Structures are given as structure tokens and as C-alpha cells.
Length: 177
Image: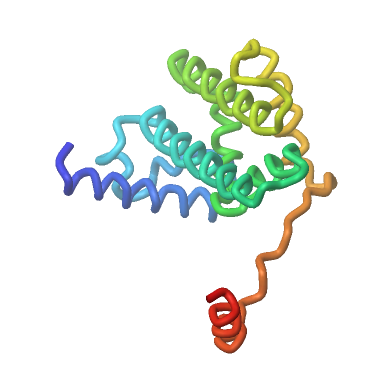
């Protein structure tokens, strides 16, 4: 894959993710312009969408943990919800194709992705170590994922600090020196 096709693939993937957020029907937008020229099939596009979700979730976990939270489980739930807000509809697509794969290969790939993600959630919540049995981590992570999806379950979502004025920033700089 050359540099131009790499960027074209990224552009088509971003357009597909945007379309997923608009449609929110849990299916891949295979009819979107450029998808059939850029991705071999549903599994190829689904893999790219899964990778985007996983990378976003991992990045948000890192960002949330940089705040040094007291409650690890709440931090994991917050990161999951932030990922879901930033990539609307994507988790519904992943869930749909996990439940209704179009091939055995897709079923195997999605089962493995789900197990890995749930284990990551459980480990980051401090409920297991990565040395524990992956099945245990997957079961615990499934519970965390269910909590994150449950709109009635309260997750602490702290508001970002209000922007500081120039005067406040200058004052801090003077006193810090």
C-alpha cells in the first residue's frame, strides 16, 4: 500500500464512521462511495472500524487515568462512554456483527476482539491482572461494558475546567517563577 492509498483508505474509513454515526442502524455502510474500492469486503471494513474503536478507547483510558482517579471502575466506565460519544454508532455496529457475523472468520475475529477488549476493561478497572484467566477477565469486562451501556447507571463525567483568562494565566506564571 503506497502513501496515497493509505490516506485514501483513512479518508474512506472516516467517511464510513461518520455515516455510521448518522445512520445508527448497527450496519456497515457498504453502499458508501469508495468503500467497495477501498475495502475488500465487510470483514475488512469491520476490522478497520474495530481498530478505530479500540484505539480510541485505549487512548481515552490513558487520558482518564492521567487524571489519577480514585475510583478505577468509574474511570473505565467514563472512558468507555467518552469513546461511545466520540464514535457514535460504532459500538452498535461492532455488537451487531458480533451477534450476526456474515462468516465463520468474522465470528472468530469478533469473538477474539470482544474477549480482548473486555479483559482490558477488567484489568484497567483493577478487577483482574493481565496474568489472570482471559475468560474471567472477559466475564468481568462484560459486566463493566453492560454498566457503561446502561443509560440509567450514573457515571461520573467531570466537566472540563473553565478556560482561564489571560490575567489568571499571567498571575500563575509570575507566582510560579
